[in-house]
Every structure is written in structure tokens, then in C-alpha cells.
Image 1 (tube, rainbow, N blue to C red):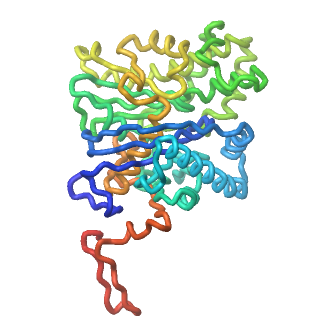
Image 2 (image 1 turned 90 degrees about the vertical axis):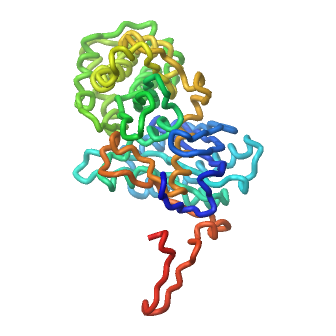
Image 3 (image 1 turned 30 degrees about the vertical axis):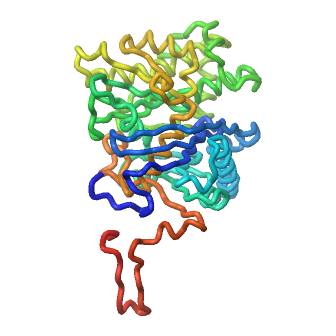
Amino acid sequence: MPGSNPLFPRLKPSAPALIVGLMSGTSADGIDAVVARITGQGRRTKAHVQADVHKAFPAALRQRILRTALHGTVAEVCELNFVLGEQFASAALAVIRRAGLKPENITAIGSHGQTIHHLPNAATPATLQIGEPAIIAERTGITAVADFRVADMAAGGQGAPLVPFADWALFTHDTRPRIVQNIGGIGNLTFLPPRATLDQVIALDTGPGNMVLDAIVSKLSSGQQAFDRNGRWATQGKVSEKLLTQLMSHPFVRRNPPKTTGREEFGEPFVRLLLLQAQRLHVRGADLVATTTAFTAATIADAYHRFIFPKIPRQQHHNLQIVLGGGGAKNATLIRMLRERIGAGEILTHEDLGISNAAKEALAFAILARETLLGRPSNVPAATGARRPVVLGKIIPAAHRSAAFMPLHRPTLQRRGVSKTTDSSNR
């Protein structure tokens, strides 16, 4: 934006930059990594993904993450922070190699980290993402930008959703309204009116995406299946409308925006309660998988009908495009249930718009990292509830690149504070 003050003076807004983006979601199945060439700003942002990789977590590490997220001691969180830092650094180097590049070709790395706990509605709202960025910077020799959520929360927001800035920059259409719907561990949407300005964007979490469904499939298969591939199990069952009605009474579903959620509301304790409810109603096997799948579809459709469709003029409903992403976009049964419940709009995938589904979330954090280095706010206050736009993230300069962060006019300090001069543009 005009008047922004670059925090990384060597990065010019008009010049292309190669940025690595790293993302691990609430499913904790691994790290998505991209190398992207990014130019422009705002709605003129252009991003070309040069390579992407998925680094799956070993099963033992995934279980460690999930256990620590709900029951971890301070010591366990502390150590896991560094363990995951090594994992994120390894993923960054792997995607750089895949792109045929070297670390010195890369401007910066934007890492979301791994959410361990997110408490937007606590007495003191708080969030914690781990995957130590100092490790990333040290192992790669590349400046890292991380811990994106806390600045928004400090400004009164929920620290989520953050991807809507990238959705707005990449997917806003001149004539067609769009909903960008991610179905990861948690479902979340970004609504983009035609030619939307950033303050017209609506974004919120819709409820569980794959999180509850994957947990049910794992329980029913005694750990033999991690997810319902293409919705095949669900298609063999019948939805229990009685159980679905009970699930839809969850307080989060009825909450108004801004609204975000996570494993704290839909993790292990919720799954245990769901299994008890299902047992009482004699809902078993494929019927339970079908009902849990329908729960995800119903929460998404409910959010559309309550919060989005009233914002779209009736004559524009036929122009609506719904762009699906995340693991749930591969579940044919879920997509069929969603289509039946929303009754409007053309359903697309990210690939239809030229971006790999697997790369999209990691690409978003590459874009956010560049905005941070340029000193530009990239939260969406209308979505998060923040009082104002803020610059997101913390910058960890790589040791051999630290000179790039020196102010263009270095401050000179005299002992006892007799004289102090700084570059006034940085005040």
C-alpha cells in the first residue's frame, strides 16, 4: 500500500521475489512447501508456483503432535517446537531442490508453523504455533518470517482466518462472486464479491472439515485407515438425521462471525462424545461415516445460507463460483452432499484456476511473508475482528544475510544517551 515502509530494504515492491511458503494444518499430516515467484501488490499480485512438495510426518510424530496439542506438558511443547523446526527447515530445502534452485536464490521463507493451541474466545485470547523459525533460518541460511497470527490477536482479532488476504489477491473476479472454500482439518470460507476491496471480504471458519471425519474413520478401522478415500465408505451408509441434528446444535455452528475454531472444540473430546451419541442411537459403521461426512457438508452449507447468500444479489446467484481446496475437495461423497445442500453455484477446484490444491495454503504464507517484509498489513479485520490492519509475523534474519535488515541509515548511539539519531522513515 502507498506509504508502506519496507522492513527488508533490499526487497523492492516492483521486483519479483522467490519466496518459500510452509504450512502444516490442523490435521497434522505433514508439511506443504512451495517455491513461488511473486510480483505486484494488492489485487495486482501475481504468484507463479515453481515447485511444491508434501513432506509427510512419520506416524509417530503425527501422534506426538496431536497428543501434545491437547495434553502436552511445557517440556513436551518446548522440545517439539525445535523438532518441528528441523522438519520445516528440511521441507524448505527439499522444495528449493525440487525447483532446481539454491538457498541463495531465495529471498525469504514464510512459515505458518504447527498450531498447538488456539484460544480466540478465552478470557485472555491466545494462540500458539510452533516449529521454531530460528532453526529454519539457521539450517537454510534464509531469512524466515513466522508467527503470523499473534499481531492480529494483539489488535483485538481472533488471529484467523489469515489466508483470505491471499484469496482476495489471487481470486477476486471482475464480474463473478466467488466463495473460496478450504476443507482441511477445519473448514473455512472466503467470500469475494466482484471487484472486491479488502474491507468487503467476508471470511470465517465453517466448522470441522476433515478433522472429525478422519478421527471417526481411524477409530472404526482400528487405525488401519487414516481417512475415507474418495468418500467410498460414506457412500455405503445412510445419514442419521437424528444424530446430524444433534451435531448441528453445537454452539460453534450457531455462533455469528467473526468465528474461528480448531482441535480445542472438534478434537478428541468431541469425537469421544460423538461416538457415545452414535452408540445411543445405534448408528454404526458406514452410517456413522456417512453422518459425519454430512456434518461437514451441513456446516458449510449453513454458513453459506446464513452469512453469504444474503450478500449476493439474487440476479448474481447463477454467476456464483465456489472454489474448493484442501483434502476434502478429493472426497466425492462430501462434494455431492455439499452440492445437494447449497443448491447454487458452479463448483470448481483450485486447479481450475491454475493453482495446485496441494500448494494453495503454503502459497498463501509465501504471499503473507512478502507483505510482511515490505511492511504492509495483510490481516483482514472484517474477518478476524481486529481493530485495525496490522503487519503480520516476526522476522528472523539468517546470519549471513543480516546486513539486509540494517536500516538504510544506521542509528548511532552515544553512551548515556547524549545523542541518538535514526532514519526518520523508520519511526
